[in-house]
Length: 266
Image 1: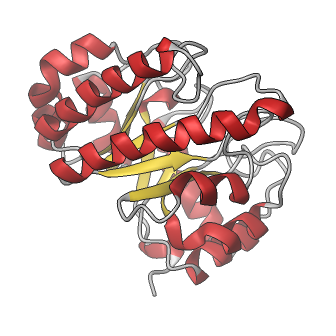
Image 2: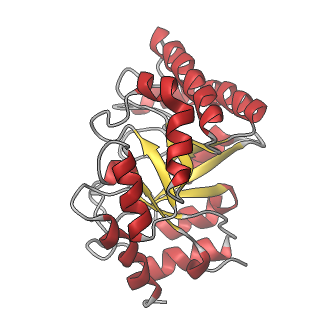
């Protein structure tokens, strides 16, 4: 069984800004071994730029000794796989283009939001069904390219706000998995969530929060039971990296050192 000390430190570009060779150098110098390319909170990664320059971005990142581990597919009120209108179809089309570009970049994991929000309770069954159908389409394309699709748990009224949602959305699809965000659960205990769906968790978004709303704080600044979360992930056989997704308030070196601090808690 892989232990917490074995998990590499990774970080989303959302922690620092847009992808650049200089950011790759910061990761290398800090000791961060894997990177998630992300649109972040204000379109940090231009979609068309990535599609055009996928090979260059992948090769350049690896030249700094950093693995380009995952791509966070874009999300917004319009880019929503669960919408009951033409926007869902447009979202699928864009995601398929980005998945193809990710293949050229050598990225093995796709992170996807199952919805945006707000979603009314009475609309959830229909929105879950639409999202599940579209996730299946994306998962099948990922399978063709040797990529794994990871559905993220989300907060508030979004789809994926509990393990039940994720279990329904993923279903029995062999190539669709879960990326567990440690600061998104507002309706379910984090450790319970891991116990329910831990066998499908292959990627993480690590940050802390106050249990009121997502905050994307560095671990130790919120209320998460990190020892309990780590122990539960170890028991579930978690196979991936310890990938941070934080507000832009910390340096790459501080992010790397945070994992060392957490190791001292165990």
